[in-house]
Image 1 (cartoon, rainbow, N blue to C red):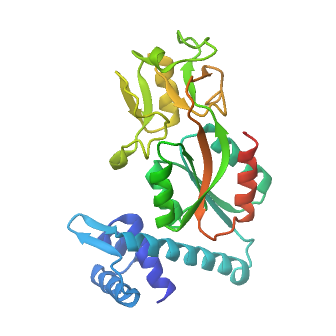
Image 2 (image 1 turned 90 degrees about the vertical axis):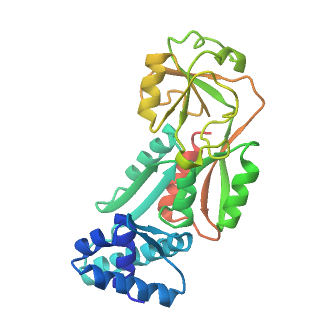
Image 3 (image 1 turned 90 degrees about the horizontal axis):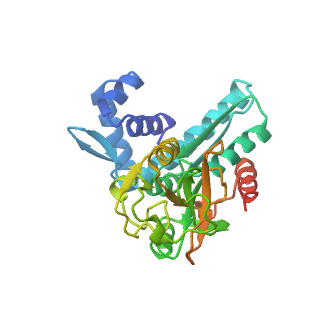
Length: 298
């Protein structure tokens, strides 16, 4: 198995199309298809599902592509340092649920790193995608939360995928509101008081369930519900619609500015935020810096 073959796999995985990948790689489609078959025969697995709409990774293919990406990245570093005499370019990737403090910690990590060349990725994404990113070694660490409601299901998924969860922060649930919201000045909010106001949740796509929800108590009935894909949209909707969301309260401003406030929710549940890594994998120096920055938000 050659580096070139591994690059073929990664390019097809990224484009989702053998035709498009062949164009980017400057080879013919039949040649690329033949090379992929050779790789699958050598690895003794099926890497891609092929159909008229393109090519998608199988479960085994996702794991294979994760390892292939690591090999290629390490080779790029070796060539840059020892062949091209370039300063080593560091790569670091975090996949996280939508927390402001994870972005703030990322900023601190980048500033402390201080070198000229790097490739850093901050990927705010769906819960299931975070798990897949860690499992397939696309990212170094994943940031998500556990609670009594999702712990059993998610920890089994982690174990089955060869991953382990390390707790970082524990917090009581808070309600995030526009500062002019009728409930904004209360010292504590009970669930009954939220009825009638729109509840905001992050979209989980095909994995919409309480186990993959980013919001604790997601099974509580809400008369009005709005799902969004990014933090900026949530803030805009809280301001414009007197809507709310439930999160950790670790970073009260939620986003930059003081237009949003957080009020403790009167429940006994606890949010445990932590980082997910592959079992037995040591944290890189950059990951250690990032994790230490996260701990400051306790």
